[in-house]
Length: 120
Image 1 (cartoon, one colour):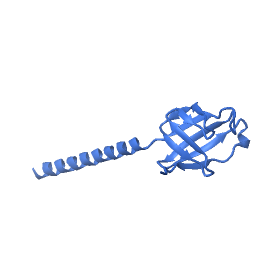
Image 2 (cartoon, rainbow, N blue to C red):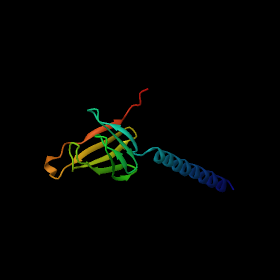
Image 3 (cartoon, rainbow, N blue to C red):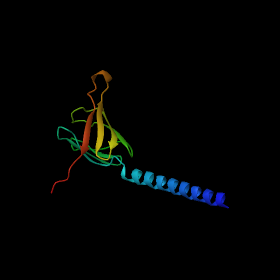
Image 4 (cartoon, rainbow, N blue to C red):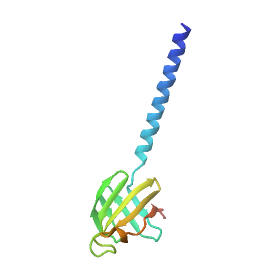
């Protein structure tokens, strides 16, 4: 009988461990997405709301979107027009942004943008 009791305790502990790991994973996934307003080191900003993006030039474009990545073509009239902007989420507070030109040798290095701070 003692062996059965120990087996039950081990099974319960294993079940609790698996349940707590599942809850921790789902909690992280819910909070983690690229949507929001992001600021560059030079003061530009970009707002991502799903596939709808407000570019640093103030234009609204539709891009390719998933929870952790977005990219779009820079519209005419903006610096880098015709190139693609690609942004990947690093964490809840940072994204890596790179402008991808038609000539890969001329691409600028990526920049880390941060969530813009709301001021009142």
